[in-house]
Image 1 (cartoon, rainbow, N blue to C red):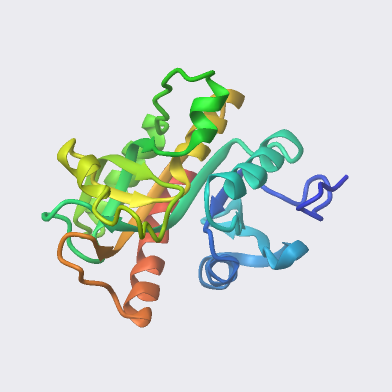
Image 2: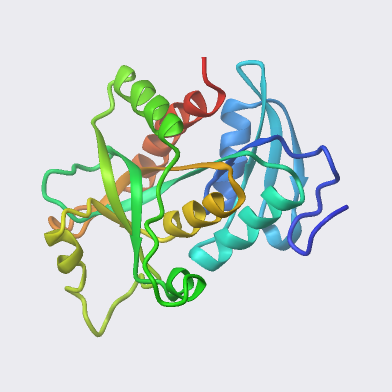
Length: 237
């Protein structure tokens, strides 16, 4: 059995899945961290791999950008392939001055300006929230590895280039939102619906406050370091 977006056969995908937006980052994760990695998906160029990490079977699947895209892949992974633990690994833009480049944000909750969530709940508000055990394990692993870690609320936005209201992010910042990204709220909502675990682990790649940003090389090396903490959280002790 396959889906419109995943060509994997039953059993090809593990119950633990890392979810980077960029399919080339999925390939990087498989090459750097997995033993005996096998590609399970190439549909639409959205690469996915399955291998082992610390003796535990683990998969990684690219998702693309935005709530609709990650929602498609997460839905199929959970409902068709039996995924139980989903960890988004990606980057974010800092909304607070105390967040530095290459530091780690663990999204305890995810606010959003997306209509996908409000439409699902018929105009009412839902608070998308991470799995606490995954969050705790990721925090422990990251701090043990020397990361500066921030835990709190993030903004999952539908807009990357807000040319009409370029300072709209400051409203979220006034309410303590740590950083902006584009997927966590959708992932957390779907995980809640299906009773599975989810977490978003995000490296600060740029700052809307200071206008600093990482070079491509620094972004890549910092991302790889962060993935280790996410994998440790996923496989446990």
